[in-house]
Image (cartoon, rainbow, N blue to C red):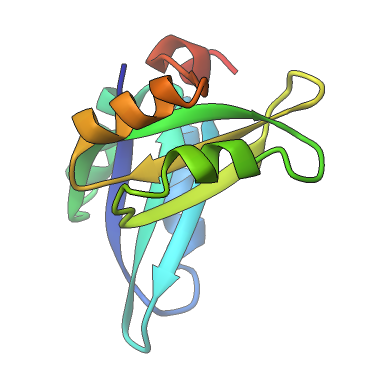
Length: 141
């Protein structure tokens, strides 16, 4: 029910993103989605990849600070207002952060959610009729 997200602590300097993505490429890991939150001196690179455990190992072996986090992935219609139903379902749920990407499935978008209470969020999403994606749905995209 949950998707493994990789978070990498990154110094905010030229070339770091290129180094990290080269490590993943060398390990034959495909990036499905990413998000970067940064400050002046550092950032957190969040990644959804096809093989999260292998990615974590490759990045750790390269000396990077890495963590795996369980996140929720949902599918929403890719048209104006398509996310509104999900937002309505989540109206009483605290959300730490989220990011989205277009699915290869025509007419669908995927939204990654990090919430403090996964079970409450899942319950709200199910009650709202929102499609919750499995890890195999995301990793095989």
